[in-house]
Structure formats: structure tokens, C-alpha cells
Image (cartoon, rainbow, N blue to C red; front, side, top):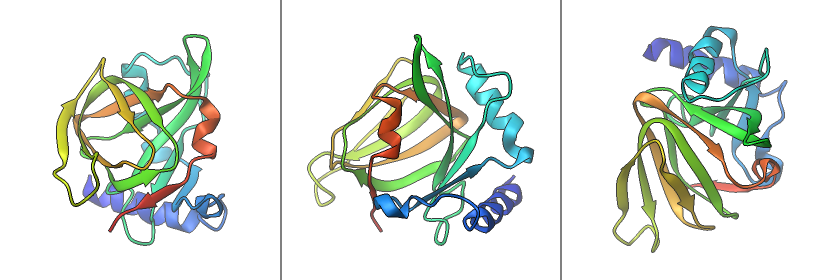
Length: 178
């Protein structure tokens, strides 16, 4: 499985020239269509969480800092669908997939619907003691603007949807911390 994640990372880097890069928004992530060999895995995660997607949903691989990190080590998959009659961004992480320490310029609020993860936040800055907890279905993951945070998906992966406007993803800036 690690070899397949490495191959996915290489494919995503190759697609950077064909895909929109987020660097114009100060977001060091690249978004590209999810390669077909990973499509069923992530679609099954989203369906296991109970999401109803279009007949042939478009799944996007979001690979952050692809020049430094693998997709497994700093990425996720998203799609858009209706949640409670409202368009929402739905996010999926495979088992062990990580989003490295980063912060945003906007407030984030997510509803965890499937799987588990370890969420770590540095509410008082990176020099203060981190707050680490396991999250799962029913947890409302709230991260305030400017708070550094990190996410590592559990053994069954993780799926959630955004509770702020669906277009917030296209407006937020992200800074990764070394």
C-alpha cells in the first residue's frame, strides 16, 4: 500500500502542470482529479459515512506541499454533495493519512461522520503545550482562525463534511509549519 501511495504522489505532482495550483491564495496545495486506481477506495469511505453523492461523483485529490510530502503524508480527497439539502464539501482520509501542522486565516467547523483520527491543536501557539485528542463520529471539529493543527486518520480512515459555506475552501489561505 505504501508503494501505491508513493505512485499516487508522483502522479499528482505530474498533474500539477495540468491542474490549478492553490499557491495564488497562499495555499501550498494542488488539486487534481483522483487517479482511477484510488477512486473506489475513497468513494467507499464517503458512502460508508452515509453521504449521497451524484451518480458519478468527481473526487479530487488535494495534495499539500507535493514537492516535500507524499499524498499519504499530507493530503486528502474531497467531493461536493448535499448534506441536509445544502451543498457541502465532503472530505475523506485513508487509514493513516495525515495533514501536517498548519493554520488558516478562517474559522473551520466540520462534522465527523465516519472513522477516527488524532487531532492535535496548539491553541496557545506552537511553544505552548499541544492539545491532542481522538475524534470520531458525532464530534464537531472546530478550529479557530490562526490556530495550528494537525490530523492523522485512524485505522479505518476518516470522513467528515464542512459546516461552513462550501465556497470557504476556495477562499482560505493555509500556511504549513515545518
